[in-house]
Length: 86
Image 1 (spheres, rainbow, N blue to C red):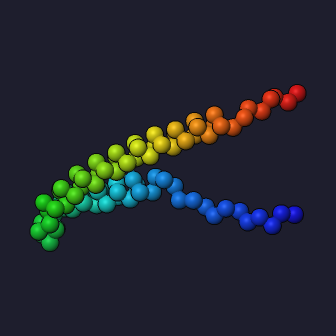
Image 2 (tube, rainbow, N blue to C red):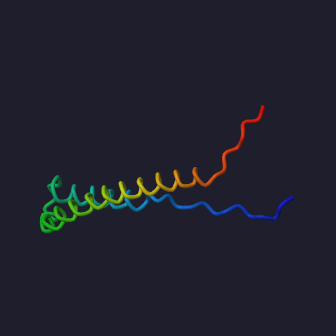
Image 3 (tube, rainbow, N blue to C red):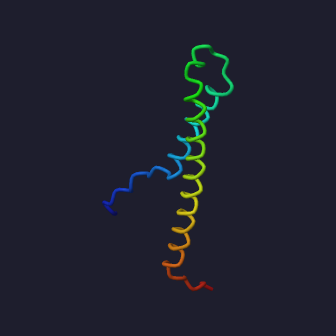
């Protein structure tokens, strides 16, 4: 019996883009859709923040996806092929 502990779970690399998109959607709602008079004071900030955050989330999502795909291809190339067993 082995005394090795299993590795702790890792956080997905997509957590940051999802958080950015969530904050971007929140700012989008407050900047463009809400009718709350209190939020009207911050309307310009929320409109600019929503554009910046949503764009940043999209760019980071694409960049993360490309990096994950490249790492998967590299890992597949580094793994020696197993001959089929009959």
